[in-house]
Each structure stands twice: as C-alpha cells, then as structure tokens.
Amino acid sequence: DGGITQSPKYLFRKEGQNVTLSCEQNLNHDAMYWYRQDPGQGLRLIYYSQIVNDFQKGDIAEGYSVSREKKESFPLTVTSAQKNPTAFYLCASSIVSSGDTTYEQYFGPGTRLTVT
Amino acid sequence: GDSVTQMEGPVTLSEEAFLTINCTYTATGYPSLFWYVQYPGEGLQLLLKATKADDKGSNKGFEATYRKETTSFHLEKGSVQVSDSAVYFCALSGGTYKYIFGTGTRLKVLA
Image 1 (cartoon, chains in turn green, orange):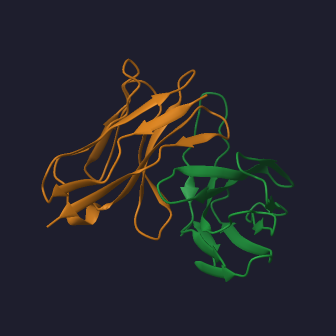
Image 2 (image 1 turned 90 degrees about the vertical axis):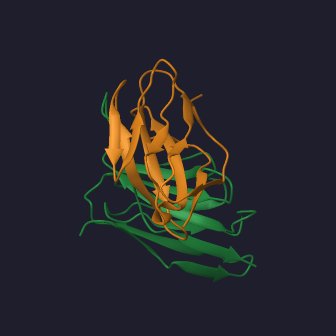
Image 3 (image 1 turned 180 degrees about the horizontal axis):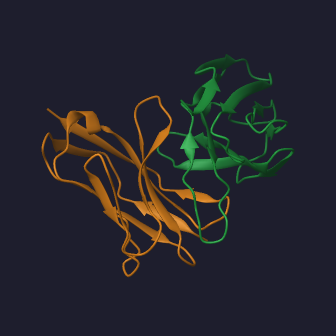
C-alpha cells in the first residue's frame, strides 16, 4: 500500500539538542511538505519541496532545516535555535499542482516532539 | 491573502443527529476546496474535495458543495455516528504549493 511514514511517533529531547524527524513516501509524489500543528491552531507550513535537491521556506522556517536528496525522503531537523519546538509535526506529499489543476495532499501519521 | 474561516468548536451532537460545520473562504481566482478529518493522535485524511463552483464532494455520508456566490464549503452529514468524533479541517489551494487550512472544528458525538 502506498503512503507516508513518519518516525518516530513520539520523540523527547533536551533543550539545546538538534533532532531530526523522518518522513518517507512511496506515492511517487514530487512535492513534499512539513507542517507544525499546535493546539487550537491550523497547520502552519515550515518548508516545502517540489523537486529533488530544491526546497523553499514556508511561513515559519526559522529554527528548522530540511534536505531533499531523494524523491521519497524529506527529513526535518529541529535545531536548538527554534524557540518553542514542542509540537505535533506533520509531513505531507502531493502531485505538483499546475495551471488549473490542484491536487490533494496526503499526510503521514505525525511525530509528537517534546523538548524539556 | 487567502484565508479559511471555520466555525468554532467543539460541536457536540447525539448519535443520528444532523451535522453542519460551516466553512467560508477568501481567495483570488478559483481555488480547490477540501475537507480533511483528523482522529486523535493521527495525521489528516482527505474526506472530500471540490475543484470548481457548484461541485459537490461526497464521501462516507459526508457532503459539501462549492458555493462561489457565498464563498462557502459547508460540511454536512445526515446522521452522525460515534465513530465520526474527530477534528475536521476545511482547506483551500489555488493551484500553487500553498494550502490554507482553517483552525479545525472538533466534533464529539454522544451515544
């Protein structure tokens, strides 16, 4: 079955440590995204990538970094510069939208990061 | 810029009641509209979508109609079940990388 996997489901880190969240998809999608979800808020875009070896900052990229070395993989690193990293992180993928055609996003199960 | 506004939750209903969750949007052009559902501790799942005015998306008994004249995409279900308890997100996308999500509406269905 095609889908998106994120690991681990729960992650605990001490303040000051960098941590990398994994996201893998086997849907053959070119576009991949990272969102942050906080209680009572919608999803906020951290980074997105529409092609291998290229990615763009979203609305809240400060304190985060990504790489896109393979089509299937889009790992997110939460650095020590992120002021409030405790949150639920969601990875998504889609076919790249073009012209009049917009495609839906497919989401992974999420990683809950707790930094103390 | 583009935006999505959803009704505040939580919405609490008895089983078999009629459900409406309101969603209105602001956008330039003709965006595609989506409803996603999120169960506790999980990612979002696409529930239904509509890509042009007057389109009706439907899935698992849920329906929503793309109303350009009222810029709305309200989610409805005729008879809810306990298993429908979740958070529902309305979203739009205008053909680029950008997907705009509402803040979500929590639905609780009581047996």
